[in-house]
Length: 309
Ligand SMILES: Nc1ncnc2c1ncn2[C@@H]1O[C@H](COP(=O)(O)OP(=O)(O)OP(=O)(O)O)[C@@H](O)[C@H]1O
Image (cartoon, rainbow, N blue to C red; front, side, top):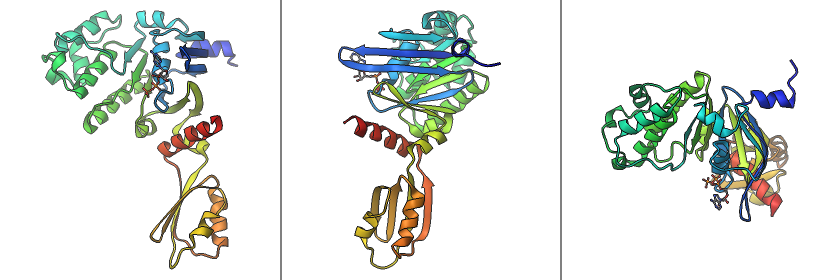
C-alpha cells in the first residue's frame, strides 16, 4: 500500500506538523515537523535550551502550540492521555510528599485505565524495598525511580521520559535501561530526552537532534555520526615532528600533537591521510575511526552555531 502523508499521520504514534512555541521573544520550538512510529525507541538530544522539554510538554498537552498541530495516536494529547495510552516521567515533576511510595504508586495505578498491579510496578521500578518510606525522605535517585514507577503504572503504548536517569547511580541507570528495553520489546514506543549521549547511542534506534527548536538531524546513531562527516585519525611519528607541515594538511578540523602521537579530526580522512604520506613521513600505528555520537553531536551543533553567527 502506498502511504500518503495523511495515512502516515493517522498511523503515527506522535505527529508534529509545523509546530511553533515561543515564550516572549524566545522561540523554544520552531516549525517542528516530526512523526514517531509504533515500537520505536527514540532519543531526543540537544544542548541546554534546545527545546527538548518544551517539545515533550507540547506532546503531553501541558503546553499548547502557538501554531501547527500536535497529534498523539491521531487524537489530541489530552484524549490520548485520558485513554491511558501515554505514560510520562517529567524532569522534576513534583511528588506528593506526605504519602508513602506504595500509596503514591497505588494512586497512579488506580487512575490508569489499563492499570498494572501495584506490586509489579514497584518491583519493576526497583522500589519494592522502599515501598513504606515517605516520599519526602527519598534520595534523588530513589525519587527518579518513583517517577518511573508512576510512568509505568499502566499498560501505556507510549512512554515519554524527560532526562530520566539524572541523579541515578551507574547500577540504577543500567537497571533502568534494562527495564526500558523490556518495555520497548513489548512493542511500546519510548521517547526520551537525555544529555547522556552514550545512553542514546546504546538504547535508541532513532536519534533526534534539536537545536534552537529545530530538528538538525534525525536518524540512527550511526547515521548521525556519518552526517557529522568528520573522522578521527591517530598515528605516531618518529624523530623530530614538523608541526607546521602537519597543520597544513587538508580537511583538518582539529589537530593535537602530544609527544610522538598526533591526533587529528578531519572532514575527509582519506584525503588527509593521502596528503600525510605526501609529506614524506612514515606514520606508525595509524588508526582511522568514525566519531563517537558525542563528538558527532558537538560537530553538528557547533557547525549550526557557526552558520548562524
Ligand atoms: N516558562 C518559560 N518561560 C520563558 N522561557 C522559557 C520557559 N520555558 C523554557 N523557556 C526557554 O525556552 C527555551 C527552550 O527551553 P527547554 O526547557 O524546552 O529546553 P531544553 O532543551 O529542555 O533545555 P535543558 O537541556 O536545559 O533542559 C530556552 O531558551 C528556555 O530558556
